[in-house]
Image 1: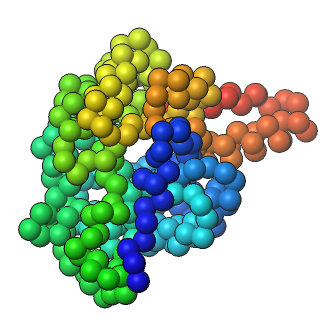
Image 2: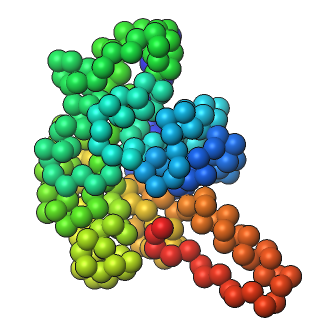
Length: 266
């Protein structure tokens, strides 16, 4: 059996790809999203109540569809990264990366020795299709995509070095955390934050890598697409569900307050 192709990296062909945050932590809900036309889905292990097992169920649920799964870990723990890779995650997003040294350690966590420190699971793992993939250990890195998130002023200051780190394939901006760290809490539209986002974009493209960002508000998403971001998360399933539920019941109960439109982040 051949190493499964990475649908996410294959899709980044110069056209902006639009994705959605999957936060319900169930295969059923994530499979529904996979049928709706999004190019990619972020299975969120940082803020959603996901476990390794629930992430596995979602990877299995979306596998039949032309919608690329991206898995976000809760931390930079190499033991967790090993487990996520073993269950078949091929594209990993890692939060709160502030410098090239952290980025290099993340790369090492995704590589087998001598290039890295990933432990060998062999026939126990879905990633190898239970030892059915030919020469998996020699070629696994070829189908991996590592995406550090820049979410702080330190990360922005080190954006060029992070993006240039060998083994980093793309960089993702977290606007809400970035704006909060920059002293503009909940306001990623502040000119200072927008300038930092532009810097990360330039640094990433300057290193020949792809750049992504979260932008649930349509005006933000369209602006970032015009700037040249390669992949943009334009929805969050929990927020969309909540918004639709509010709008539905408000049609029948006039005394309910209006639900505001999606904001710039969580």
